[in-house]
Amino acid sequence: MANLRRRFLARSLACLFTGLSVGAKQPAAAAPAPPLSLPGTSLGDLMRPRMGRRRRASSWDRSGRNADRLQLAPGETVSIADIRGAGCIRHIWMTIASNEPAYLRRIVLRAYWDGEDEPSVETPVGDFFGVGHGRVSNFWSLPLNMVTGGRPEQENRAAMNCWFPMPFARSARITVQNEGKEQVRALYFYVDYEEYDQLPNDFLRFHAQWRRQYPTPPSVQIVDRSLNFAKVNELVNLDGRGNYVILEAEGRGHYVGCVLSIDHINPIPNFGWFGEGDDMIFIDGEPTPSLVGTGTEDYFCAAWGYPHGHNSMPYHGISLAGPTDDSAAPYSGKWTMYRFHIEDPIMFTRSIKVTIEHGHGNCHANDYSSVAYWYQTEPHAKFPPLPPVEQRLPIPDRESLRQYWKTF
Image (cartoon, helix red, strand yellow):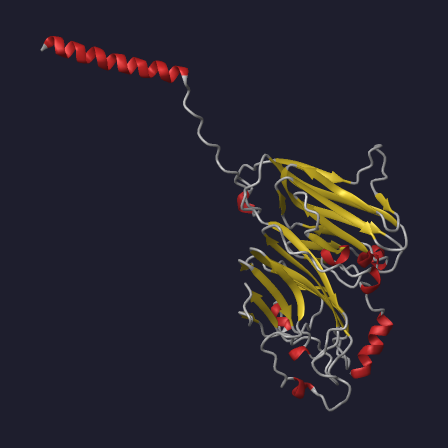
């Protein structure tokens, strides 16, 4: 019995030491690397360590002098960022000096992610940063702002900022093209981004698209005094036919907001307000919209018109306001408003169509233009062709007022 116990103990020790020897020759496989975890951007996240490396592309003068700008000849395109590898653009700052009228509609911003041939961002530069009609205006929001005032504002110049995050897995390229007839005297810019070893596979890509319809097709002809506010209110529009289209996209993602610009040139007689048009949003190909609003001012989180005009808030506001006095036509002129779905993004799995009426029942033949912002999987549907410069320029103020008074 004692011999049996000794043999059992010897075999056990041999197995133990053999296992240790094998373990010494073949180290255990390393634990899998944890997935990339990117912190948020709130104050509460600042205590957490951040992944990545801070990088910047800018127009700084490589000679060390103070000519920190680029100049663009008519028709010229420049890349303001051409990044290789994975990362995320966190901030874009830009300011431009040009003597050409409405240059902010003539200069186009484009962005391409991961080597794509078609841009994911394509919009006149001024509209992209939150103000339409080729104008500048001092306003702020969480993702966008303009900073101007005094003489620079009189000269239609502003600092423009964007904080929408723009991730990419292999590359990012941002271009600016001068489609005007005059030289851009100065383009200053920063593109601040984070560089990563890799990007999570499920990250969506940022998109922005500009559209314009002038004039919007009216459902009625406002040409005589018999068509008053009460009669217009009897119009019926349940399917969104004829609405102004802010966005049509295919894929999976979420819509995060828009900038909408209106030049009100076709008022109801004796009623100068351009609103009352309902937002209607169609998700995943539905024939009737599942999201229906109660009026333009309501979608942009206001009420009873825009009685105080210019109004900056984090997620909604009026970045450019027309007259708001107590005259007979208090709502004439050019306006830009914004609504960002930062806390309430509108998700879609196959497609989305974002629309809004131009006046109740699409009664107005106005000038509508917009930038839609959204995130989605790639590839995205090809954008509608960007209209040529002549079809992007704002209506001259004198002509806008002339058309307004024809029906008011």
